[in-house]
Length: 253
Length: 262
Image (cartoon, rainbow over all chains, first blue to last red; front, side):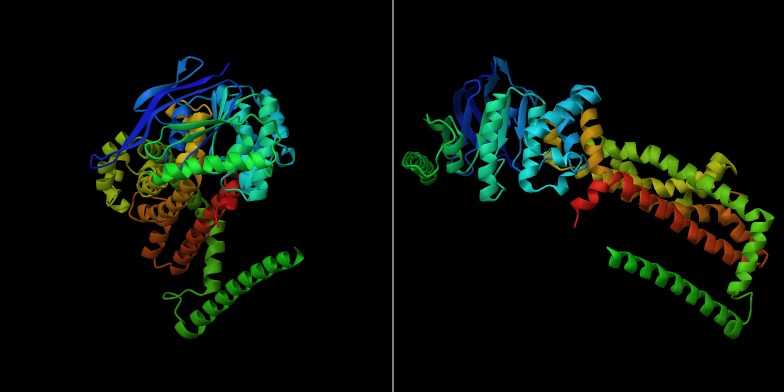
């Protein structure tokens, strides 16, 4: 049971000189267990900030985030995070990166190696078990980052434009693999992206944020089964609709 | 691959040839142009002096003492420099409190500490070690500080969401490994500075034995070939220590780092 409740969350950043920039305002959202949510919106609308608040890396100025009734107060391994940039520890091999969270939990060496091996296999990189991150391609690095987050067995997986830096082909393949992993692990996933195409392909529901200060403008349910056909007319319609919403939000600024 | 090996061999051969040529030129200049072993002892004079000093056991005794001084100084610098550098690099308050003191002490040349080294420790290995410590401490401190200051934020956040929930865990598992390249280069610089301090400390009478001390004593006795032997030993030993350290760091600690930088 890993429902995420976002209650009236607002966040403003104060800069030197006393100017206060509001980034988010009155965000309300309820996410069900095992749901796949994509956050989209005009650039600078605070979607990454919202994700970081859920992760506990930022504190909201108003409101709160609760997960299973517990208020989020700081980072916790129960909420896994995959970052946009490469966040693997370059001094650790692939397997030791994946085992990092288990090591912090105090899991015995043998056991954490076994668990890490299982997730390594799940992302199809067993061959690169003892490689260092610099020896991997961008797509492989993000796969290891996903395995590293999953190895902690989190309730919620937070993903901040994880495929943003990848080429289109790799990106499409990673999306397919992610859906596969989602089906296997049954995690709740909150996924930030600036690609509407990606959101329509992946999400159960797309949450469109308004421009700064961001709030929920629209929630669009995508009822189709997966895998989805990107070339279908329905897909194009939804994509156009979401894009228009984002454009309007951008122009309204 | 074969070509590569040949190129490595070629480089090594050229190095040896270059050193041999330098020795020949040295010998020729000393014998034919200077022709005064007091002003410039020749290569063969120096080699003979080396054999002599080695045979008497004096050179080895000096060497062991100097290495003892060096170990004391570098060891103390590591023991204090790394933790203080970590504290200053990681905790704002520690930086604000310690930095002014460091800034005042740092410009004092290590050799200016020699009088107090003698008064505090007497003519003991600790006294020479202290002067080396002063020279070696700051590069280690600064290397550690800089390394901790430039830990990428993303690694710290990744550490946090993966379950590092105390500063100690973050330092131990994220910041320290990330800072190791910077700490290692601080140590390397400190060993160079420490080596120079060693010679100066011994020369200025912080010890009555050691490579630096003997170099100076031989000068008093106008044994210039012996002076040259000690000079060359100091040079080769410094080079040797640096090589060992660099090899260790590159092979063991920083295999990952080679792949991360251009």
